[in-house]
Image 1: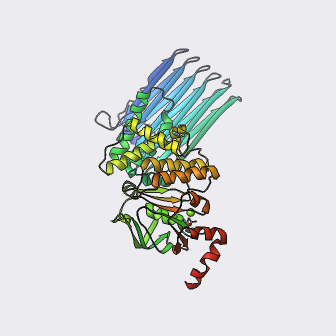
Image 2: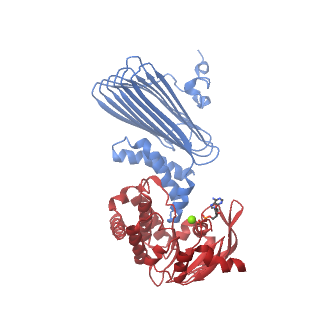
Image 3: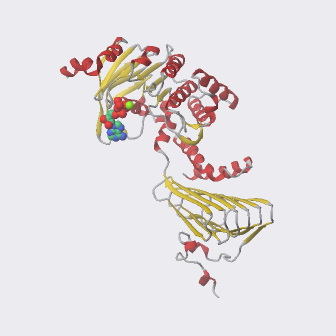
Length: 252
Length: 253
Ligand SMILES: Nc1ncnc2c1ncn2[C@@H]1O[C@H](COP(=O)(O)OP(=O)(O)O)[C@@H](O)[C@H]1O
Ligand SMILES: [Mg+2]
């Protein structure tokens, strides 16, 4: 079959706000598998910085299984110059925990996005996902988050939180939470909002002597911080934050 | 030190300051009193350079330089401090980070060496103690979850740390109980009473002026100064009210 025929289209929910034209020639069926044994704990980070190291299309698809009582923590920063997508399909066993913190940042006319499908397959598992997106130019940040709670997955606790910060007119964000819940004793929380830099705060900071650039940096840092609070390793957290802040400083 | 001449300013095309003139020499505390809506906060914001507050006429000279020509952060580096009537909350940014960046930005602009973390921390703790603010509050996010009185006290701690040459304090006394009022008033005296410094003290009440004794008192009404006198003018206002004190002026106007 010719490869072009297999390319997804924007009619598919998971690709609705995507840059599907950038998928030409990509190995769409390639998934990275992460299996976490019962009781184990795994932390992974993905950093797509802007620079020579990143490819024109950064497509990452991870399929994660979290065993009974195990924990998986994923943190990602998508700060690429071009299209970037991290797609995570995660299945939680009894009492497992999934923690996800994601940042998209950038301008130009391109898309940076997270698409997650979180399957609570057994009871008492918890998941917490926090995404922060900062964009300018014609940059777009997306968070499509599916949460499936199967029939027997009682005492599931799943949370999803998205905030977008638009630094210029023309930038945009999309947040689409999708909940499919077939158990009755379940907690599911989701929130999404979008805004701009707080002008009152900017003036207050200027009145104390901060340049507009430094004030913006502090406000963006505060905004993005939520996505990384779950990352306990200080050095790692600072490294991820630095990639995002450098991007803002260099290109805006 | 501060010379405001025939200042006109508008917000959204609406004229708020209407030919305001006022001079504050070095070494003086000048109190501004006036009814609600007179334009007191607008004056403070115009001096600070708040976006949206457009000066249409007049001039402001600060230590011989044109204040209105500078960006807000440059005014701060030049030694101007604006105490906000409603201090702003900044979630996610700690007081210590905010103030250290602010102080070192100002020092850099003036060609001075930055303070180290240790030096800064000591300075911040000293000023918190001066204003009787729990030093743990310095670690908290800027003004987030502070009571009205704590915000005003924190504002004065900021002033102590930044050590400005001139302070415009907009209703720093509102929201303070009697004890806090004394602490804040004495803080203002300790930080700003000096021969080479000046203060524009915007207030509604005589109470603060009993602690921070002003050299001059002006009444601001409808966007201009309608009367200036000594400290006795504030007492007169307290006893007789704006209408009575201003009546002869408005009759002539
Ligand atoms: N953002 C604004 N847009 C339009 N009018 C404003 C704005 N802020 C203040 N004003 C008006 O300007 C006048 C002066 O306000 P203000 O300077 O806050 O007075 P004061 O501090 O003396 O109480 C009032 O009539 C007020 O309604
Ligand atoms: Mg006011």
